[in-house]
Length: 505
Image (cartoon, rainbow, N blue to C red; front, side, top):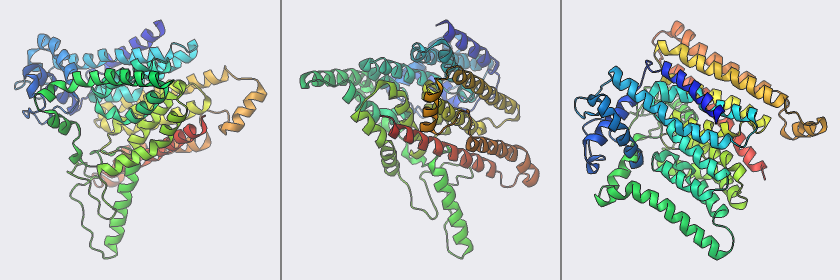
């Protein structure tokens, strides 16, 4: 555990330095939820509209917010004041909420430690560094402001139990996770199939008994979470808050997924057809303007609704579900979970760019398993982090995000290079391995090198060349280019993971 605490302590020092940095409106969102849960009775939590930042996380996170509000009210009562606390960002509030995020990262430490405890010392240190020092997590949680480390820590704890063969505990912890943040439900089909085949196995009586035990345990979590709101007759209101499908297909800032290509193709076709004399009605919801409409509107291509995205996600993850059904393997669960989150990210409804953390953190657990995994993670983690650069748009944060990504990239390069140069098998075995994988011996191949150089070019264009050439005109183009270019990398990651899942037996 000494290694784990050393990595965590160093990350705390970095987080402390980031306390004065810019924070987004998510800071006020979470501060308001502290005030809401501490000032109003439970029956008013999901019907209160005193602020635009209404509670839209599951009740278990609302309970968590209530617990945080207890010391907050003692440190600075204005933090938890429903009226006077609106848009309150005094130093006491900023420091307290920043420290609450850092403290909640103990769950991330616990999950990473559990999953790394069986590894040799050097491999364990690489895993801890990849997870705890993730620059994307630092940007999103400790600058932009959210509690992703807390949620991802719960996910890793669940995966740790599953890898150890403690399926009942893993299922319960996963139920706690989706009752805290429902976006993790993307992995629910995989968990169901895997637990059905791996935990509820054996002769019929044993399988039925285990199915009932798992059902009762998971059901108890949901009863504790949603039971009070069933009692108050508000369960429909709660689900309306949790699943606001009217927000549209894409977030205001496009997540780099499949729908970026769909949107751009629609805009190109609309432009071409308009030039050819066709009457094309421009949608009111302009993605380039950064607005989110009540529904996804396209000028030429067919409209997309939540059912279509749900079916696409389910179809994309079906090879993984089949693998889990035919041959459930604890050693593959982290890879399979990461793949299901990749499917949700690539084809889901109203995906946020921050959801790529659901992919990179689980993949960080297995990044040191093989050279192929290391190469994939190296590229993916850079793309994921870079796609979040637009979240920090103020000039004073620019050197921070660049340095965080650059230092992490160097650490990955040194760590992976040292790991695989020090653990070479005998030559014939290595030759066979390289021949099967087609990956060669380097960490970054020629295609990946060209892609990463292109990423640097995209950044130089957006930060320096575009403002110099166009000034304030076409201000949406740099963001569109980042989304498009990163979407190429994410599509490659999805295809690579699918290939690995199909190949693994």
